[in-house]
Length: 381
Image 1: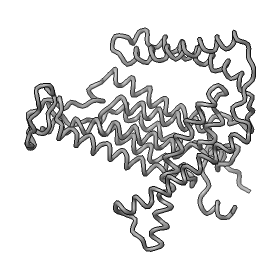
Image 2: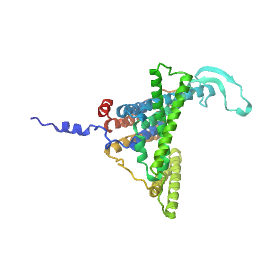
Image 3: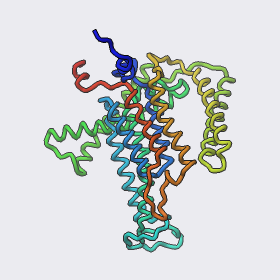
Image 4: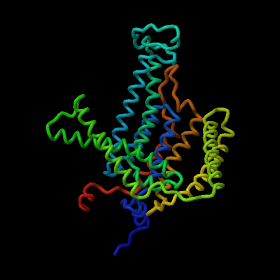
């Protein structure tokens, strides 16, 4: 009998296990990972880095997406991002841009405007510099939307609602319903288009869109009524009595903490407020956390099988935070590499350290539990 070697024995332990109800990642871990990628995208207009961020998000979604209805919305967010890029480009061409340029592509007929509309023009000269600038800015916004779409495709909204603090439960219901509206609408549209295709009816054109839109709105209304009825049946909205001093302290800590977070964030973004921005942000977060903790005393609900943050969840969330942190540092150390110039036009370069940091975002594809395959789901059914 041959004994397995040390590395061979370690290999199964390092391999990601199959996802079950007990070891599935918390929804907050996926959202922190996606927000880290979105933060990194907000710090750069380099199309190479933005394309790398989109590729990382798409690979993780393809590797860890389930067959749940909300997991099918990633393609819709990609189309929305492309639409945003197109709209940004059209606005730049027809409404002009403040970016000066010397490379004229073509000239449109300019519409004369009254004197009170000085500074605004419709038509006129279109330069290569303003087109490239519009593409860069549109690509950044599209990448932000795609990162949010990745979180929508990977995170279970029900588990996200369950993991919210008690003080934010009422707000969390509205947020979760809003986040699930787009994925459910995409699933309803796909289902209705498939049904029309099987019946030999057209799925494109204005008439088809109008005929599909009404059932989609009816389905959304029925889901809203069902959610409201289930919440009412479970006694939603009951609160416990707390002393007036605790309520006042909760309000002061929460509002003061949120103001501190806003002031600290502004300080970090401003060039002259970076020294006091971080202390204000940390103090605001501490005060807001204390206020939310005290506010949770009013909630009388309990949690069934609360999500546990294991090592894999922290690795997933930490990978997104690492990407954001390195990109913020790179933006301060070498801003020209993250924001390629358009006047004069220069070709974007690939900065090595930010690109390597973006690749850290691939960690969830290796450590997150493997979702069950469609064949396994059919066998269980």
